Amino acid sequence: MSVFLPIVLNWLLAYGYPVIWFAIFIASAGFPIPSALVLLAAGAFAQAGDFNIFLLAVLALSASVCGDSAGYFIGRRWGTKVIDWLETSKWNRFIPPSSIERGRARFKKQAAWAVFLTRFLFPALGGVVNLIAGADPYPYRYFLPCDISGEILSAVIPLSLGYAFGASWEAVGDVLGSFSIFALALLAATFLALYLVRTARRSRIEKIETAKEPAIVQLKKTGTVPPDNPAQRSGELPLS
Image (cartoon, rainbow, N blue to C red; front, side):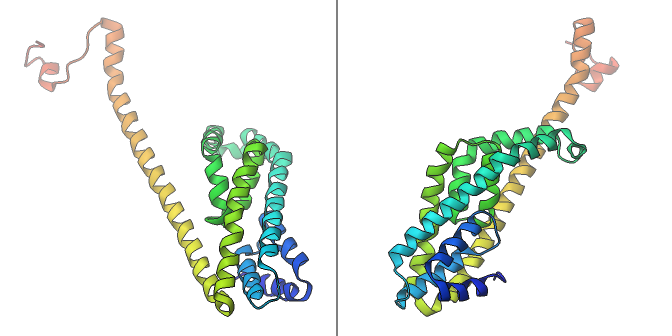
């Protein structure tokens, strides 16, 4: 649990809706505040009559979309310069420009899903995705609908759970936290498996190409291809 959460909850009880909006905004912009836990607590307080659940949903959605947009435009303003610097600086020994280019091309293909899923399923990656989307740049007219649709789920799910479970919201928060960690671990394992499969496939292709090179060189020089049978190479068997 974040060290900021008790402070936010105390402010939430003392100052109400403005604290909720500001906490969700800065969490969406990338600050380490667990917005899902804040919304769970707010939903529980709404069940007790301290807040209006529908107003909470509107506030949470507007704050999260504004925070995501702030991260997007920060990436648009400075992210491109950082990527260009990485491609030309001494760091390209560790991060080859070709890898950066492949990563940007892959992100463009999957950007909509990346934005949508990191709103509620992988929220820890949301701030990074916002910056990358702005730096790439992924058009804002496409970013915004994906962001809103994902943030609707991000607001409704924890608020509903907090409202439904009331005083047990902390236990629900522990379950959601464990699920988020499991989802991140599964995502990392999936990417690692894909990387290993692609590496093995590339290595196999390179071996095949390397084995073909002597035949291609001889074909260019003499117009004949060296035999595959070792006995034919030594002259023990006829070539045909």
